[in-house]
Image (cartoon, rainbow over all chains, first blue to last red; front, top):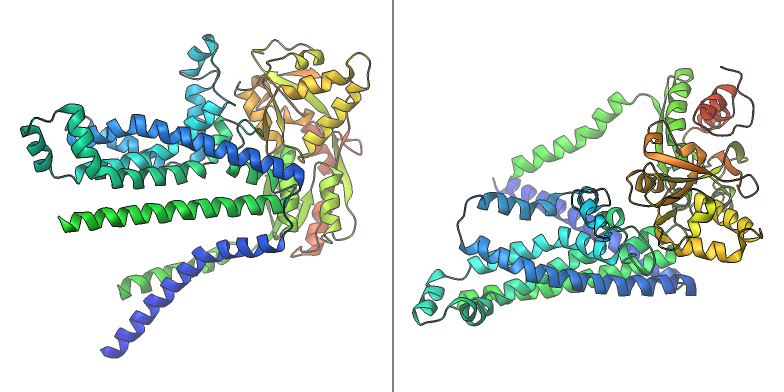
Amino acid sequence: MRHSWTVGSGLVRLLAAVMLIFLGLPLVALLLRALQSPLPGSVSLDAIISAVWLSFLSTLCTLMVALLLGTPLAYVLARRRFPLRRLAIVLVELPVVLPPAVAGLALLIAFGRRGLVGAGLADLGISLPFTFVAVVMAQTFVAAPFYIRAAQIAFESIPREIEDAARADGAGGWSLFRFVTLPLAGRGLAAGLVLCWARALGEFGATILFAGSLQGRTQTMPLLIYNVLERDISAAIWTGLLLVGLALVALLISQSLTRKAHHDDSRD
Amino acid sequence: MMKFLGAMLGLLLMIPLGVHAQEERETLTVFAAASLTDAFEELADAFEAQYPYVEVVYSFGGSSQLAAQIIEGAPVDVFASANARQMTLVEEAGLVAGEALRFARNRLVVIVPNDNPANIETLADLARPGLLLVLAAPGVPIRDYTEIMLEKMAADPDYGPDYRQAVLDNLVSEEDNVRQVVAKIALGEGDAGIVYLSDVTPDQSPNLKTITVPSAFNTIASYPIAALTGAANPETAQAFVDFTRSVEGQCILKRWNFLTLRSCRNP
């Protein structure tokens, strides 16, 4: 009895180790290769700086859109019951599992020059593909759901009694949200925003299809990597490492925020 | 937990066995320029008819990206590039077995969507400001050939050096391979693109209109092919290379609008 139990737990640990190594090895390899590679030349450095700037600007815009439009949606999903609520939840979840290329294609079919909405916009003189706006749209489509889901969970975790009590004391609408709901949900929202940012930063498939790739206008860091690795692989490696570093920072912040949120909950 | 893990492990180990049981044929891995997609698919069928124990497996893409993958160690038997430069990079890495041989040629053409939203009739129109021009990324052969074409035009008094800059100012996207350029134009998203003559395939021609590039400015794109040192079976790899240059291979390429090295005697 005891003999087979030890073999079992050994196998479990072995398999766990294999998975961990598989996840870690490519990142270690990237780091080692970077240390052996020359630093990018001036032409590539130019492109890298453009890409970093575009990545930061576009993801910032994406965060603002997610915050502005995603927070109300998350709140409604958390607090209200309405017909087709299930459908709304599925629509929010879908971009998370959808292949980014499909998302890009769908955006193109909807907002392209011959698109469902795009054709009308074209008549008004507005052309979305190949623009910075298209980059933000692509990022928002794939990344906002991460924030909306986290925000919904954060709102749902606030006991109704607290909100009811505040309402009984005379707080209503905006002041209820600002002074009661938001502070309590704050950490969950922040953690969601960080995840949203990380996903937007790494967005590639939808961006390249819908917004195209041009240095200084639409070429974010992931697009640069894909574009430049055939001409200057060291530039690609260094940009890749930069992205890994940023994603790591995002994850650590998000994890610590979530831990603090749970810690606060358990103290109540 | 243990039974579950054991079952998963068992299933996982059976997959390579199952795959092996089906795949008793020898696999020939060919990396080929994106513009060769249709022609090479047909070529593979003809090759496999002659060599029934071989299965040809393709990876199509921008020649620059394929070359980079080969140099980084991708297991490839044959490389067919859209220009000499990418083949030279692979040669310099010591990965070409024997000699790279030319097997096809191509020419450039300007394409616009079938409804021609920007009303482009001549090459001069490409310099009109506000146009949405889509090209391939630098390093991809079609882009290198386009730069040569623009340089030739810049040297011509009818166009001048400003023409080249005006055209490049209209660039809105740099795609990874020539077929992506075709896709963007066929979808109507870009106003114009520069691709190979052979890229206007029967499938795509209803979606496109072409504008000829005069011979004075057009370039002959030269496609080299070579067996690689890493080939699993060097004879089969060389046989494929030779097949592309055989009468049958050349006829297939010609049917797909490539310029061939030898005349095709089949009707």
